[in-house]
Image (cartoon, rainbow, N blue to C red; front, side, top):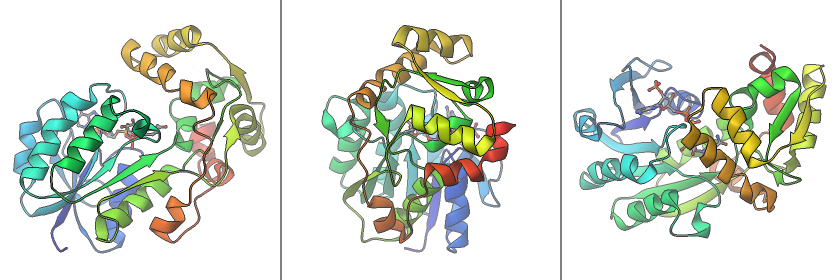
Length: 279
Ligand SMILES: NC(=O)c1ccc[n+]([C@@H]2O[C@H](COP(=O)([O-])OP(=O)(O)OC[C@H]3O[C@@H](n4cnc5c(N)ncnc54)[C@H](OP(=O)(O)O)[C@@H]3O)[C@@H](O)[C@H]2O)c1
């Protein structure tokens, strides 16, 4: 493959390290953002999911694309299916960032996007990451600041994955052909409960951080008053159900198999993001 790789969500948690990794491999990369600014040295192109038709102008010379739904959006089918159609019509290989567990039920919107890609006839790889370690310096940052991470996780454990490992897995799936047609559950190397995760952050940051199990209603109110849309807060509350049920505790070897490198631990994540977590 010698064409250009289009990265959607290029300025985000996974997109930015993905662009970096692809450029380091010598790939040609086009970075899609709403501003059209360059990302990590890759030329930018303006794209908004609200207007999928504008993507057509960005596809010149593109033979592979990284597709994701930006966080904060819940309309997976409405926003992603038109993009899948545009890419598949040009036989552009799609590497889709889905989410771990969505294949439990074909009615889940992300699963329906996966199925549309699988049936489209274009080459594809599906990546299903578990909960990101990076949520601790984004969604749960206010909690870390206040010393209390209050989420409805019960006693459930999660094999948190570092966004850099998702990016490295995505780079492998995009640049190699031997993973085509496959779906991978991406996890970190061990499953931790939120109390253990809070203790670990406490150790690394040198200040008290504890976990408080809350119910959905309090969690939704908390996020809504922090500016998250009610619909997205409800979506996040709903996806804590599988956490409480123990479904996010699985550990896979997908990251080492895709990248040749061990997946980073939550401690490595925390040490490397000490400034973002403490700032
Ligand atoms: N966080 C988790 O624990 C977790 C776990 C499993 C799966 N996931 C999935 O991973 C995805 C999020 O990945 P991420 O955190 O890497 O993404 P992200 O950082 O939230 O978003 C990526 C980029 O999308 C761009 N964007 C936002 N709205 C847009 C729009 N309307 N049109 C075009 N671009 C837009 C933003 O860049 P600009 O402002 O520059 O345009 C943003 O930097 C979601 O689909 C989520 O469901 C997340």
